[in-house]
Length: 376
Image (tube, rainbow, N blue to C red; front, side, top):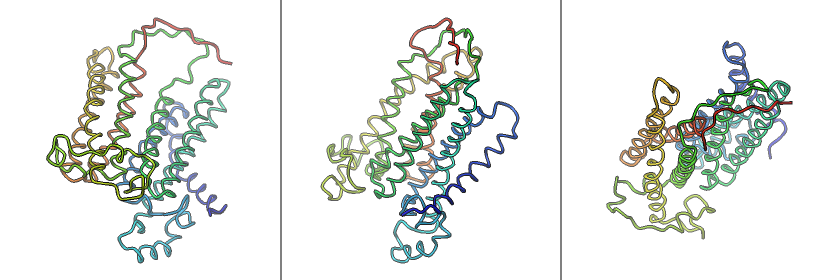
């Protein structure tokens, strides 16, 4: 049972981890501190997603089999005796000192993001008169989202890496990244009453929305592959075990509430079900690539001189798609190397960031100008 002392120690660690970048931003000249903090949160959340993938791929998710501490302590050094005992009783098990540190560093980073969002809420509250109420409301929504994300992080441990919990944990992390990016790119300090001229926006909001939906579906399928350890269920490419259409078990493969490595009735999951999980990710990849490539080419086709930022985002989107294609194939051909798997996760997070940024260039219809209402 977590104690007050444990929570106090973890809170101090979170404040230290969050205080270092906050102090740096406070001294760094340039944009407003609020704006710099918002983009720092985007950067930290991106890093957290990559380190979370490293935690999973290094089999460190149960390096500390309790939550929020490690054997009731705030760091693995204090739990060294318990860790050594667990490692001695099961040398090939999930608990080692290195894995415990990897898991706890992941938790420290998550606490840091949560602490920085609390700072964001406080700043938005202090700027109610100049910014209005919407930055505060949106920031409170981000705080709720990161708390839900933290709950799924706890369930990831307590439910022993149950695939649907781990997959949802990743999806919520990417949703948090998207929301933080959308928040950061807002011009909250805009004057309260102003006429803003809007040029015709070159991207279709329908296309951006479709690309976001397909990307979310493809990322979930990829998370389902990874959390079920189905990457090597099809060890060849482009075939799957020598077949263009392998044997499949769709119901077994996509029964979501079950233990890791088990089916719905508690038996070991069949190879056919794992093939199905892997094959579904490959098949839908073609649909997602088509939608994302269409959007990327549409953004890239604008004048580089007239819209340099949009042109760069289009180039970034196409580059990330190529990265996903190369790393996805490498995961199969080279038997799931750690660097390729991490780059694949980073590419997925990068695509989310890129699409949210591109959404600012999309419109359902052409607008000429709008008049912003006065904020109270």
